[in-house]
Length: 386
Image 1 (cartoon, rainbow, N blue to C red):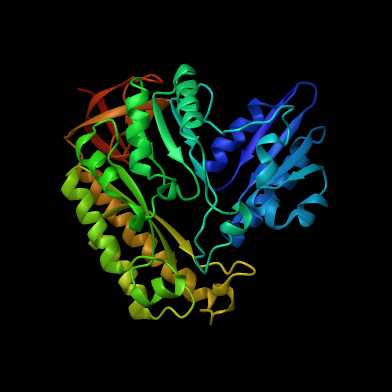
Image 2: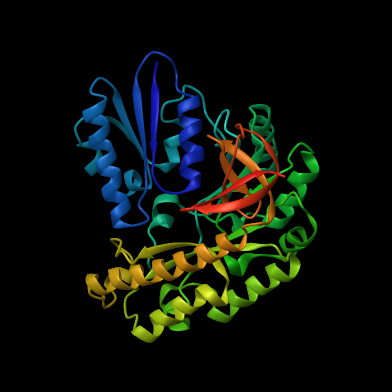
């Protein structure tokens, strides 16, 4: 049997795709398309992935799952080659013969994702993911601990905790990380996926400041840098809150680096509001920005707000991306000549602890140590073992 996975969207989807593939019964060929619905473009790409799978693997059955499948089940079910459509509630058992409780990461991968939570209790006006994923649900600690242990047994050197809203983990994300690090001494590299900045709690800040096994890159779901736009998004933080969160992180750990999600061209956004998001890159010292042009998702409040012309949305997104790229280039250039801890993941390439991409001369998969950075090559650093 052959199971091919095609995954779009978030890290949680990647972890779930691996679980689906690993638990599939023998006897049939499947292509699993794990779809995304975060933007209209993501839904379009999901449909495109189904059509490509049907064209390239005509003898295989196609399973479509994920958020786009949840929201548009009928549309995907009628596509050529699709044998099964499963919403998020059934996705982990969509090919399995037995119930699957917890998604875990990539067998044999150096860096592996482990889900700790799914769903969301918040209602940001631009987002339809809460409709696709349902309310926030936290996995029991024992399941997470066991999933991490399995990934380490399979060869993972770094674990990334992922979910839809991991800072909403019941009992606190900081407490979860503390328990996990205490329970699994083999876990030497723990990384976190996207964080809601307003939910970063005292135990997590304590870990950031005092636990070297928690890696110092933090990706924040900021979305905008203007207070009125944040209010219309129904976000729970202000611009000042975002800046203060970054200040607290950097006060706890000076070498911490910041990533951020930002939306350009939200409905009613004026030029002044757009510039407030642009300057947030500097004010929050963002070196890894994910920029999204606003996409009106069906049945969301933001889709009913006064829209901005698509040309202007695209132009503001391009301006944000250009500014973010310039900041990132300066950050990478600033590391030339420094020594960085690096884990090599594949093909001689990996990441430093601060999540800078690094290619180490002569390195093999799974190698780790300190490397001296000698140059910047396009979007990554090059280095030699120190």
